[in-house]
Length: 400
Image (cartoon, rainbow, N blue to C red):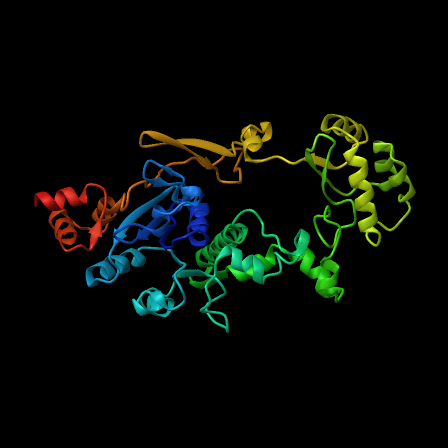
């Protein structure tokens, strides 16, 4: 769908790469500019997961992109970067505010050379304001946006980098909006996204309720089983007699009591399930604890109750709906394999395929430079000067 759109990406870590991966999946030609020694995410991975020397962290957000390795501190490297930008529809970057400005690749400098550019920046807190220069990392954003405080117990983080991923999706949405504007008007747009706003946006329902009703932090206190502060009970996580965790959502109290055939829940059926949420949660926990998972499943399904077993990632891999939706895709990486998460949206019933994996540093440097008009001798000279690196380039330089 985005064939013909070219994006130059100065992105590392997760928020920026995730945003450009969404666009690359949809067909945009995304050229990722990485350092001579490789992007940070090539050299680190959570749980130290690598397929040979290829980082799972890199693989999770960099498919379907071409990659060029440049020394942006050199005049020649900057010249190549500027040539790439001159032929691009959009620039996306997530360096600390001011870094690309010092290199002459910031928005104001690029806009002078290319007034119709879409220039998108992803940061921790935004490009201006009192927290501009503070480090922005997912866990710290969860802490600062109330996500940790609102969790069960008031001090629990979400078990994934959700602000990074959501921030990437929001930035991709902003870039697409700017691209449509550019096609209609010929005008560029400055697009800015940040983790702080993304972390707040994730909680739109909860924060709107809290601020509109002028609540205070005391509402966060609740029975340990309850998932949120603002839903009525029994909305939360409970354990069965065979110690299996289950999620119980919003249900009709009278029908729920009959489903579990529980007198404690019957007595509470006419209460306000929000005002009496702690008592209701304790009664639910006691009722659920008297059933095995199999018995609970049969009882709740018979009454069409909203509930679900708590699955881990191993369960998810075998989930029949995940298989039907083509959520996962196994790809060959050198002599091994990696399981990737596919693009989350279907278009006319199809999932965008994995077309390209730049598994080596500067994987596509030569191809990209040739498109810019560089010949063999020019590429060899750049390699000898340490301006570029990439697949096959060092061997070419050594033999020159």
